[in-house]
Image: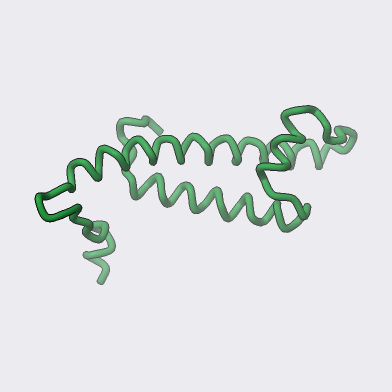
Length: 102
């Protein structure tokens, strides 16, 4: 996904999807993703079982991708809020697709 083509809505949707994936692994292994990632990055995890290696690789990748999406969100959010600022405050409106579905 090209960072210039992404919307806040898309980023929020992706972040929530990563949250669901990470939460499932956190519950499976009884460990928060932040703690897992530290163990993964420092090479402290056992690497004898191919299924674990594969799953841990996905876990680490999803954690990294979520962090990148949050950074993108923070950048776009700042610009968005600046654009929405009016003399009487910041104007927030529902996402267009949600308005049309209602």
